[in-house]
Length: 70
Image (cartoon, rainbow, N blue to C red):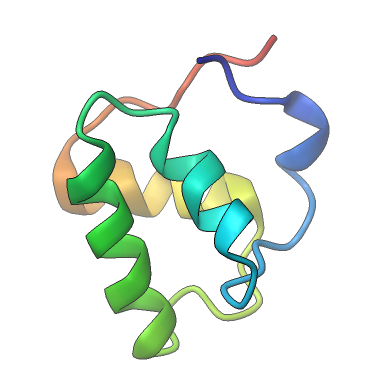
């Protein structure tokens, strides 16, 4: 799945499961990314982060490349 460039500048909403599922679905390791997002939402790390910042966090913590925009 390719990411939607229009989402990059919008804030990631931890309280919306579809947001977590969308980002996790961009990676082969869906469950690993989903668990990271849940953990970072719970500890406040990605509170008020843009989607692009979330992708960068996934790269930093899990080593996965930032998905390509469509």
